[in-house]
Image (cartoon, rainbow, N blue to C red; front, side):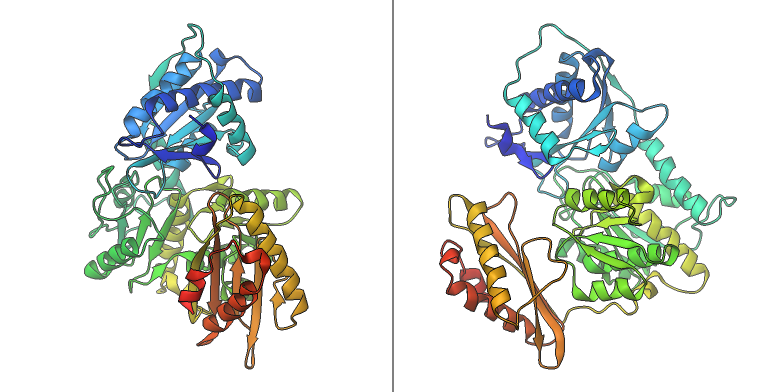
Length: 503
Protein backbone atom coordinates (compact mmCIF):
# COMPACT_ATOMS: atom_id res chain seq x y z
CA UNK A 1 0.00 0.00 0.00
CA UNK A 2 1.47 3.36 -1.07
CA UNK A 3 -0.06 5.81 1.39
CA UNK A 4 1.16 8.83 -0.58
CA UNK A 5 -1.28 7.87 -3.34
CA UNK A 6 -4.12 8.65 -0.92
CA UNK A 7 -3.08 12.29 -0.72
CA UNK A 8 -5.49 14.79 -2.24
CA UNK A 9 -4.37 18.32 -1.47
CA UNK A 10 -4.19 18.51 2.32
CA UNK A 11 -6.60 15.57 2.79
CA UNK A 12 -6.61 11.81 2.40
CA UNK A 13 -9.05 10.45 -0.19
CA UNK A 14 -9.73 7.22 -2.07
CA UNK A 15 -12.23 4.61 -3.17
CA UNK A 16 -13.80 3.14 -0.02
CA UNK A 17 -16.44 0.76 -1.41
CA UNK A 18 -16.17 -2.31 -3.62
CA UNK A 19 -13.34 -4.50 -4.89
CA UNK A 20 -11.21 -1.51 -5.93
CA UNK A 21 -11.28 0.03 -2.45
CA UNK A 22 -7.97 1.47 -1.26
CA UNK A 23 -9.32 3.34 1.76
CA UNK A 24 -10.13 0.18 3.71
CA UNK A 25 -10.76 -0.30 7.41
CA UNK A 26 -7.18 -1.56 7.85
CA UNK A 27 -5.88 1.55 6.07
CA UNK A 28 -8.02 3.80 8.27
CA UNK A 29 -6.81 2.05 11.42
CA UNK A 30 -3.19 2.56 10.36
CA UNK A 31 -3.85 6.24 9.63
CA UNK A 32 -5.35 6.61 13.11
CA UNK A 33 -2.18 5.17 14.64
CA UNK A 34 0.03 7.35 12.46
CA UNK A 35 -1.88 10.49 13.46
CA UNK A 36 -1.32 9.73 17.14
CA UNK A 37 2.39 9.21 16.48
CA UNK A 38 2.45 12.55 14.62
CA UNK A 39 0.68 14.27 17.53
CA UNK A 40 3.04 12.92 20.19
CA UNK A 41 5.88 14.62 18.34
CA UNK A 42 3.94 17.80 17.53
CA UNK A 43 2.50 18.26 21.03
CA UNK A 44 5.45 16.90 22.97
CA UNK A 45 3.39 14.63 25.21
CA UNK A 46 2.76 10.88 25.46
CA UNK A 47 -0.09 9.15 23.65
CA UNK A 48 -2.07 8.40 26.83
CA UNK A 49 -2.48 12.17 27.39
CA UNK A 50 -3.82 12.80 23.87
CA UNK A 51 -7.49 12.95 22.87
CA UNK A 52 -8.64 12.83 19.23
CA UNK A 53 -12.25 13.46 18.20
CA UNK A 54 -13.81 11.85 15.13
CA UNK A 55 -16.86 12.72 13.05
CA UNK A 56 -18.31 11.65 9.69
CA UNK A 57 -20.73 12.71 6.99
CA UNK A 58 -23.54 10.51 5.65
CA UNK A 59 -21.52 8.26 3.33
CA UNK A 60 -22.26 4.54 3.55
CA UNK A 61 -18.62 3.75 4.32
CA UNK A 62 -18.45 6.38 7.07
CA UNK A 63 -19.43 4.36 10.17
CA UNK A 64 -16.98 1.53 9.48
CA UNK A 65 -14.09 3.87 8.63
CA UNK A 66 -14.73 6.01 11.70
CA UNK A 67 -14.78 2.91 13.90
CA UNK A 68 -11.53 1.61 12.39
CA UNK A 69 -9.78 4.99 12.72
CA UNK A 70 -10.90 5.21 16.36
CA UNK A 71 -9.53 1.72 16.98
CA UNK A 72 -6.18 2.80 15.56
CA UNK A 73 -6.13 5.82 17.86
CA UNK A 74 -7.00 3.69 20.90
CA UNK A 75 -4.48 1.01 19.91
CA UNK A 76 -1.80 3.69 20.13
CA UNK A 77 -2.79 4.50 23.71
CA UNK A 78 -4.71 7.72 23.02
CA UNK A 79 -8.39 8.46 23.66
CA UNK A 80 -10.77 8.52 20.69
CA UNK A 81 -14.05 10.43 21.00
CA UNK A 82 -16.77 9.52 18.48
CA UNK A 83 -18.99 12.52 17.64
CA UNK A 84 -21.01 10.52 15.10
CA UNK A 85 -22.65 12.50 12.29
CA UNK A 86 -21.00 15.91 12.08
CA UNK A 87 -19.78 18.59 9.71
CA UNK A 88 -16.17 19.21 8.81
CA UNK A 89 -16.12 22.76 10.26
CA UNK A 90 -17.61 21.48 13.50
CA UNK A 91 -14.67 19.11 13.93
CA UNK A 92 -12.32 22.07 14.22
CA UNK A 93 -14.74 24.16 16.29
CA UNK A 94 -14.81 21.34 18.84
CA UNK A 95 -11.09 21.86 19.48
CA UNK A 96 -11.84 25.48 20.41
CA UNK A 97 -14.96 24.74 22.47
CA UNK A 98 -14.87 24.59 26.26
CA UNK A 99 -16.06 21.25 27.58
CA UNK A 100 -14.82 19.41 24.49
CA UNK A 101 -11.38 20.71 23.42
CA UNK A 102 -9.73 17.55 22.08
CA UNK A 103 -6.07 17.85 21.12
CA UNK A 104 -6.96 17.12 17.51
CA UNK A 105 -9.76 15.79 15.34
CA UNK A 106 -10.47 13.81 12.19
CA UNK A 107 -13.43 14.15 9.81
CA UNK A 108 -14.36 11.14 7.68
CA UNK A 109 -15.59 12.63 4.40
CA UNK A 110 -14.90 12.98 0.69
CA UNK A 111 -16.74 16.30 0.53
CA UNK A 112 -18.75 16.62 -2.72
CA UNK A 113 -17.25 13.57 -4.42
CA UNK A 114 -19.27 10.46 -5.42
CA UNK A 115 -20.67 8.19 -2.72
CA UNK A 116 -18.15 5.36 -3.21
CA UNK A 117 -15.24 7.63 -2.25
CA UNK A 118 -14.33 8.66 1.26
CA UNK A 119 -11.47 10.36 3.01
CA UNK A 120 -9.95 11.81 6.17
CA UNK A 121 -9.42 15.46 7.05
CA UNK A 122 -7.06 16.08 9.96
CA UNK A 123 -7.20 19.04 12.36
CA UNK A 124 -4.92 20.30 15.12
CA UNK A 125 -5.30 23.38 17.31
CA UNK A 126 -3.88 25.43 14.41
CA UNK A 127 -6.55 24.29 11.94
CA UNK A 128 -6.37 21.78 9.11
CA UNK A 129 -3.04 20.06 8.58
CA UNK A 130 -0.85 21.66 5.96
CA UNK A 131 0.50 19.79 2.94
CA UNK A 132 3.84 18.97 4.56
CA UNK A 133 2.23 17.87 7.84
CA UNK A 134 0.02 15.45 5.95
CA UNK A 135 3.09 14.11 4.16
CA UNK A 136 4.56 13.36 7.57
CA UNK A 137 1.42 11.50 8.70
CA UNK A 138 1.41 9.43 5.50
CA UNK A 139 5.10 8.66 5.87
CA UNK A 140 4.48 7.44 9.41
CA UNK A 141 1.59 5.29 8.19
CA UNK A 142 3.80 3.78 5.49
CA UNK A 143 6.19 2.41 8.11
CA UNK A 144 3.78 1.96 11.00
CA UNK A 145 4.19 -1.13 13.15
CA UNK A 146 1.42 -2.38 15.40
CA UNK A 147 1.89 -1.02 18.92
CA UNK A 148 2.58 -3.48 21.70
CA UNK A 149 -0.53 -3.81 23.84
CA UNK A 150 -1.04 -0.06 24.20
CA UNK A 151 -4.79 0.48 24.57
CA UNK A 152 -6.56 3.76 25.00
CA UNK A 153 -10.28 4.41 25.29
CA UNK A 154 -13.06 4.94 22.74
CA UNK A 155 -15.87 7.21 23.93
CA UNK A 156 -19.03 8.58 22.33
CA UNK A 157 -20.11 12.20 22.71
CA UNK A 158 -22.36 14.25 20.37
CA UNK A 159 -21.02 17.65 19.32
CA UNK A 160 -23.42 18.73 16.57
CA UNK A 161 -25.99 20.20 19.03
CA UNK A 162 -23.25 22.43 20.48
CA UNK A 163 -22.16 23.55 17.02
CA UNK A 164 -25.79 24.34 16.20
CA UNK A 165 -26.01 26.60 19.25
CA UNK A 166 -22.90 28.40 18.00
CA UNK A 167 -24.64 29.18 14.70
CA UNK A 168 -27.85 30.20 16.46
CA UNK A 169 -25.91 32.66 18.59
CA UNK A 170 -24.52 34.32 15.42
CA UNK A 171 -28.06 34.86 14.14
CA UNK A 172 -29.44 36.09 17.46
CA UNK A 173 -26.58 38.51 18.10
CA UNK A 174 -26.57 39.71 14.48
CA UNK A 175 -30.25 40.65 14.31
CA UNK A 176 -32.04 41.17 17.64
CA UNK A 177 -30.42 39.50 20.64
CA UNK A 178 -33.49 39.97 22.84
CA UNK A 179 -35.90 38.41 20.30
CA UNK A 180 -36.42 34.64 20.51
CA UNK A 181 -37.41 34.20 16.85
CA UNK A 182 -35.44 36.86 14.90
CA UNK A 183 -36.01 35.19 11.51
CA UNK A 184 -39.80 35.54 11.52
CA UNK A 185 -40.91 36.56 8.04
CA UNK A 186 -37.90 35.07 6.22
CA UNK A 187 -38.59 32.10 3.94
CA UNK A 188 -35.54 29.92 3.35
CA UNK A 189 -35.31 26.68 1.37
CA UNK A 190 -32.51 24.40 2.62
CA UNK A 191 -31.05 21.71 0.34
CA UNK A 192 -28.70 19.42 2.26
CA UNK A 193 -28.16 17.01 -0.65
CA UNK A 194 -28.71 14.09 1.78
CA UNK A 195 -25.41 15.00 3.46
CA UNK A 196 -24.74 16.01 7.06
CA UNK A 197 -26.38 19.45 6.93
CA UNK A 198 -30.08 18.64 7.18
CA UNK A 199 -30.28 19.92 10.76
CA UNK A 200 -29.80 23.47 9.45
CA UNK A 201 -33.45 23.64 8.33
CA UNK A 202 -34.83 22.75 11.76
CA UNK A 203 -32.41 25.20 13.36
CA UNK A 204 -33.70 28.03 11.18
CA UNK A 205 -37.27 27.00 11.94
CA UNK A 206 -36.57 27.23 15.66
CA UNK A 207 -35.46 30.82 15.06
CA UNK A 208 -38.69 31.71 13.27
CA UNK A 209 -37.80 31.14 9.61
CA UNK A 210 -40.28 29.49 7.26
CA UNK A 211 -38.55 26.48 5.67
CA UNK A 212 -41.32 25.08 3.45
CA UNK A 213 -39.84 23.58 0.30
CA UNK A 214 -36.62 22.42 1.96
CA UNK A 215 -35.41 19.17 0.48
CA UNK A 216 -33.07 16.20 0.82
CA UNK A 217 -32.55 16.83 4.53
CA UNK A 218 -32.35 13.15 5.53
CA UNK A 219 -28.82 11.69 5.51
CA UNK A 220 -28.41 9.13 2.71
CA UNK A 221 -24.87 8.14 1.87
CA UNK A 222 -25.72 7.15 -1.70
CA UNK A 223 -26.81 10.75 -2.54
CA UNK A 224 -29.84 9.58 -4.54
CA UNK A 225 -31.23 13.00 -5.54
CA UNK A 226 -28.24 14.98 -6.77
CA UNK A 227 -24.53 15.35 -6.14
CA UNK A 228 -24.08 17.45 -2.97
CA UNK A 229 -21.96 20.08 -4.67
CA UNK A 230 -22.65 23.84 -4.86
CA UNK A 231 -20.80 23.96 -8.19
CA UNK A 232 -22.87 21.20 -9.81
CA UNK A 233 -25.39 22.45 -12.41
CA UNK A 234 -28.04 19.85 -11.58
CA UNK A 235 -27.75 20.52 -7.85
CA UNK A 236 -28.07 24.28 -8.31
CA UNK A 237 -30.97 23.85 -10.73
CA UNK A 238 -32.72 21.68 -8.14
CA UNK A 239 -32.53 24.20 -5.31
CA UNK A 240 -33.42 27.05 -7.70
CA UNK A 241 -36.57 25.19 -8.76
CA UNK A 242 -37.48 24.55 -5.13
CA UNK A 243 -37.19 28.27 -4.30
CA UNK A 244 -39.36 29.28 -7.24
CA UNK A 245 -41.96 26.61 -6.49
CA UNK A 246 -42.70 27.91 -2.98
CA UNK A 247 -41.80 31.58 -3.54
CA UNK A 248 -39.03 31.64 -0.93
CA UNK A 249 -36.79 34.61 -0.20
CA UNK A 250 -33.71 32.51 -0.88
CA UNK A 251 -32.34 28.99 -0.93
CA UNK A 252 -29.16 27.55 0.54
CA UNK A 253 -27.30 24.43 -0.52
CA UNK A 254 -24.42 22.58 1.17
CA UNK A 255 -21.98 19.92 0.11
CA UNK A 256 -21.95 16.63 2.02
CA UNK A 257 -19.73 17.80 4.90
CA UNK A 258 -20.89 21.45 4.87
CA UNK A 259 -17.55 23.16 4.43
CA UNK A 260 -18.85 24.64 1.15
CA UNK A 261 -22.14 26.31 0.34
CA UNK A 262 -23.97 28.50 -2.15
CA UNK A 263 -27.31 30.29 -2.27
CA UNK A 264 -29.98 31.24 -4.79
CA UNK A 265 -32.03 34.44 -4.63
CA UNK A 266 -35.82 34.87 -4.79
CA UNK A 267 -35.73 34.71 -8.59
CA UNK A 268 -33.84 31.40 -8.54
CA UNK A 269 -30.60 33.06 -9.66
CA UNK A 270 -27.52 31.12 -8.58
CA UNK A 271 -25.24 32.95 -6.16
CA UNK A 272 -22.07 30.88 -6.32
CA UNK A 273 -18.54 31.26 -7.67
CA UNK A 274 -17.78 34.95 -8.49
CA UNK A 275 -21.23 36.12 -7.38
CA UNK A 276 -20.84 34.50 -3.96
CA UNK A 277 -17.40 36.08 -3.54
CA UNK A 278 -18.81 39.47 -4.54
CA UNK A 279 -21.72 39.22 -2.09
CA UNK A 280 -19.71 38.33 1.02
CA UNK A 281 -17.01 40.83 -0.02
CA UNK A 282 -19.61 43.63 -0.20
CA UNK A 283 -20.83 42.80 3.31
CA UNK A 284 -17.32 42.79 4.75
CA UNK A 285 -16.12 45.87 2.87
CA UNK A 286 -19.16 47.81 4.07
CA UNK A 287 -17.90 47.13 7.59
CA UNK A 288 -14.16 47.38 6.82
CA UNK A 289 -13.41 49.79 3.94
CA UNK A 290 -10.00 49.19 2.39
CA UNK A 291 -9.80 45.53 3.40
CA UNK A 292 -8.06 42.94 1.22
CA UNK A 293 -10.00 39.98 -0.17
CA UNK A 294 -7.92 36.90 -1.03
CA UNK A 295 -9.30 34.63 -3.77
CA UNK A 296 -8.03 31.87 -6.00
CA UNK A 297 -6.53 32.62 -9.41
CA UNK A 298 -9.51 32.00 -11.71
CA UNK A 299 -11.76 34.81 -10.47
CA UNK A 300 -13.13 37.19 -13.09
CA UNK A 301 -11.99 40.66 -14.08
CA UNK A 302 -15.47 41.93 -13.23
CA UNK A 303 -15.08 40.70 -9.66
CA UNK A 304 -11.81 42.62 -9.29
CA UNK A 305 -13.50 45.82 -10.44
CA UNK A 306 -16.44 45.17 -8.10
CA UNK A 307 -14.18 44.75 -5.06
CA UNK A 308 -12.32 47.95 -5.97
CA UNK A 309 -15.60 49.84 -6.37
CA UNK A 310 -16.58 48.73 -2.87
CA UNK A 311 -13.28 50.19 -1.63
CA UNK A 312 -11.37 46.95 -1.25
CA UNK A 313 -8.23 45.31 -2.61
CA UNK A 314 -8.47 42.09 -4.61
CA UNK A 315 -5.56 39.71 -4.06
CA UNK A 316 -5.51 36.70 -6.38
CA UNK A 317 -3.53 33.66 -5.25
CA UNK A 318 -3.10 29.99 -6.14
CA UNK A 319 -5.94 27.50 -6.50
CA UNK A 320 -6.55 25.24 -3.51
CA UNK A 321 -8.44 26.30 -0.41
CA UNK A 322 -5.46 25.69 1.89
CA UNK A 323 -3.29 27.90 -0.34
CA UNK A 324 -5.83 30.74 -0.21
CA UNK A 325 -6.35 30.43 3.55
CA UNK A 326 -2.64 30.21 4.35
CA UNK A 327 -1.93 33.30 2.25
CA UNK A 328 -4.67 35.29 4.01
CA UNK A 329 -3.24 34.31 7.39
CA UNK A 330 0.24 35.32 6.21
CA UNK A 331 -1.04 38.70 5.01
CA UNK A 332 -2.71 39.39 8.35
CA UNK A 333 0.48 38.49 10.19
CA UNK A 334 2.27 40.98 7.92
CA UNK A 335 -0.16 43.71 8.98
CA UNK A 336 -2.58 43.58 6.04
CA UNK A 337 -6.26 43.85 6.96
CA UNK A 338 -7.57 40.69 5.31
CA UNK A 339 -10.92 39.40 6.66
CA UNK A 340 -11.67 36.81 3.97
CA UNK A 341 -10.07 33.97 2.04
CA UNK A 342 -12.41 32.43 -0.54
CA UNK A 343 -12.17 30.09 -3.50
CA UNK A 344 -14.57 30.03 -6.45
CA UNK A 345 -15.46 26.45 -5.43
CA UNK A 346 -17.30 27.87 -2.40
CA UNK A 347 -14.62 27.30 0.24
CA UNK A 348 -14.87 30.49 2.32
CA UNK A 349 -12.83 31.22 5.44
CA UNK A 350 -13.45 34.36 7.48
CA UNK A 351 -11.06 35.82 10.01
CA UNK A 352 -14.00 36.20 12.40
CA UNK A 353 -14.31 32.39 12.31
CA UNK A 354 -10.63 31.49 12.86
CA UNK A 355 -10.06 31.27 9.06
CA UNK A 356 -11.96 28.00 9.06
CA UNK A 357 -13.57 27.19 5.71
CA UNK A 358 -17.14 26.76 6.90
CA UNK A 359 -20.05 26.81 4.47
CA UNK A 360 -22.61 27.02 7.26
CA UNK A 361 -20.88 29.97 8.88
CA UNK A 362 -20.80 31.77 5.53
CA UNK A 363 -24.50 31.09 4.87
CA UNK A 364 -25.38 32.17 8.40
CA UNK A 365 -23.64 35.53 7.87
CA UNK A 366 -25.56 35.93 4.59
CA UNK A 367 -28.88 35.04 6.25
CA UNK A 368 -28.33 37.68 8.93
CA UNK A 369 -27.74 40.24 6.18
CA UNK A 370 -30.77 38.98 4.23
CA UNK A 371 -33.01 39.46 7.27
CA UNK A 372 -31.59 42.93 7.94
CA UNK A 373 -32.19 43.94 4.32
CA UNK A 374 -35.71 42.46 4.26
CA UNK A 375 -36.58 44.59 7.29
CA UNK A 376 -35.53 47.58 5.15
CA UNK A 377 -37.58 46.42 2.17
CA UNK A 378 -34.54 45.24 0.19
CA UNK A 379 -33.29 41.87 -1.05
CA UNK A 380 -29.85 40.36 -0.64
CA UNK A 381 -29.29 40.48 -4.42
CA UNK A 382 -29.13 44.27 -4.25
CA UNK A 383 -25.56 43.82 -3.02
CA UNK A 384 -24.58 42.47 -6.44
CA UNK A 385 -25.59 45.60 -8.34
CA UNK A 386 -22.60 46.73 -10.39
CA UNK A 387 -21.01 43.27 -10.67
CA UNK A 388 -19.97 42.88 -14.31
CA UNK A 389 -20.48 39.31 -15.48
CA UNK A 390 -18.46 37.85 -18.37
CA UNK A 391 -20.24 37.54 -21.70
CA UNK A 392 -18.39 34.28 -22.41
CA UNK A 393 -16.48 31.85 -20.20
CA UNK A 394 -14.93 28.43 -20.60
CA UNK A 395 -12.83 25.87 -18.72
CA UNK A 396 -10.80 23.34 -20.69
CA UNK A 397 -8.49 20.63 -19.37
CA UNK A 398 -5.44 19.87 -21.50
CA UNK A 399 -3.94 16.40 -20.80
CA UNK A 400 -0.19 16.27 -20.23
CA UNK A 401 1.30 13.20 -21.93
CA UNK A 402 4.77 13.32 -20.33
CA UNK A 403 5.68 10.91 -17.53
CA UNK A 404 6.94 13.83 -15.45
CA UNK A 405 3.82 15.90 -16.09
CA UNK A 406 4.72 18.59 -13.54
CA UNK A 407 8.06 19.36 -15.20
CA UNK A 408 6.49 19.37 -18.68
CA UNK A 409 3.71 21.74 -17.61
CA UNK A 410 6.17 24.10 -15.90
CA UNK A 411 8.27 24.30 -19.07
CA UNK A 412 5.20 25.30 -21.07
CA UNK A 413 4.25 27.98 -18.56
CA UNK A 414 7.79 29.40 -18.54
CA UNK A 415 7.88 29.47 -22.34
CA UNK A 416 4.48 31.17 -22.52
CA UNK A 417 5.67 33.85 -20.11
CA UNK A 418 8.65 34.46 -22.39
CA UNK A 419 6.35 34.50 -25.41
CA UNK A 420 4.12 37.08 -23.72
CA UNK A 421 7.04 39.42 -23.12
CA UNK A 422 7.92 39.13 -26.82
CA UNK A 423 4.39 40.02 -28.04
CA UNK A 424 3.10 43.39 -26.89
CA UNK A 425 -0.57 42.47 -27.41
CA UNK A 426 -0.17 39.82 -24.69
CA UNK A 427 -0.64 41.59 -21.34
CA UNK A 428 0.71 39.64 -18.35
CA UNK A 429 -1.56 40.15 -15.34
CA UNK A 430 0.18 42.23 -12.66
CA UNK A 431 -1.11 39.79 -10.01
CA UNK A 432 -0.01 36.66 -11.88
CA UNK A 433 0.81 34.31 -8.97
CA UNK A 434 -0.07 30.98 -10.55
CA UNK A 435 0.54 29.66 -14.05
CA UNK A 436 0.28 32.33 -16.71
CA UNK A 437 -2.64 34.79 -16.87
CA UNK A 438 -2.78 36.90 -20.03
CA UNK A 439 -5.32 39.52 -21.08
CA UNK A 440 -5.96 41.04 -24.51
CA UNK A 441 -7.43 44.27 -25.83
CA UNK A 442 -10.22 43.65 -28.34
CA UNK A 443 -11.26 46.59 -30.49
CA UNK A 444 -11.65 49.60 -28.22
CA UNK A 445 -12.08 47.41 -25.14
CA UNK A 446 -8.98 47.35 -22.93
CA UNK A 447 -8.26 43.97 -21.29
CA UNK A 448 -11.54 42.68 -22.73
CA UNK A 449 -10.66 38.98 -22.46
CA UNK A 450 -8.18 36.77 -20.63
CA UNK A 451 -6.97 33.22 -20.19
CA UNK A 452 -5.23 31.48 -17.30
CA UNK A 453 -3.24 28.31 -17.96
CA UNK A 454 -1.90 26.59 -14.89
CA UNK A 455 -0.50 23.34 -13.57
CA UNK A 456 -2.69 20.87 -11.73
CA UNK A 457 -0.85 19.82 -8.59
CA UNK A 458 -2.04 16.21 -8.60
CA UNK A 459 -3.35 15.33 -12.06
CA UNK A 460 -1.55 15.13 -15.44
CA UNK A 461 -3.55 18.01 -16.88
CA UNK A 462 -3.22 21.75 -17.42
CA UNK A 463 -6.51 23.49 -16.52
CA UNK A 464 -7.28 26.40 -18.85
CA UNK A 465 -9.80 29.07 -17.85
CA UNK A 466 -10.84 31.91 -20.14
CA UNK A 467 -13.39 34.73 -20.03
CA UNK A 468 -14.44 37.58 -22.28
CA UNK A 469 -16.45 40.76 -21.74
CA UNK A 470 -17.27 40.98 -25.48
CA UNK A 471 -18.82 38.60 -27.99
CA UNK A 472 -16.22 36.56 -29.81
CA UNK A 473 -13.46 37.39 -27.35
CA UNK A 474 -13.18 33.83 -26.08
CA UNK A 475 -12.46 32.48 -29.53
CA UNK A 476 -9.93 35.26 -30.07
CA UNK A 477 -7.83 34.63 -26.93
CA UNK A 478 -8.01 30.85 -27.20
CA UNK A 479 -6.97 31.13 -30.83
CA UNK A 480 -3.96 33.22 -29.82
CA UNK A 481 -3.00 30.61 -27.23
CA UNK A 482 -3.41 27.69 -29.63
CA UNK A 483 -1.34 29.48 -32.24
CA UNK A 484 1.46 30.05 -29.74
CA UNK A 485 1.47 26.55 -28.22
CA UNK A 486 1.24 24.78 -31.58
CA UNK A 487 4.63 26.20 -32.54
CA UNK A 488 6.34 25.54 -29.19
CA UNK A 489 8.64 22.50 -28.85
CA UNK A 490 7.92 22.59 -25.11
CA UNK A 491 4.21 21.98 -25.79
CA UNK A 492 4.64 18.80 -27.83
CA UNK A 493 3.72 16.67 -24.83
CA UNK A 494 0.55 18.67 -24.17
CA UNK A 495 -2.60 17.34 -25.86
CA UNK A 496 -4.01 20.43 -27.58
CA UNK A 497 -7.00 18.60 -29.07
CA UNK A 498 -9.53 19.84 -26.45
CA UNK A 499 -8.43 23.42 -27.20
CA UNK A 500 -8.58 22.84 -30.96
CA UNK A 501 -12.10 21.38 -30.68
CA UNK A 502 -13.25 24.46 -28.78
CA UNK A 503 -12.05 26.63 -31.65
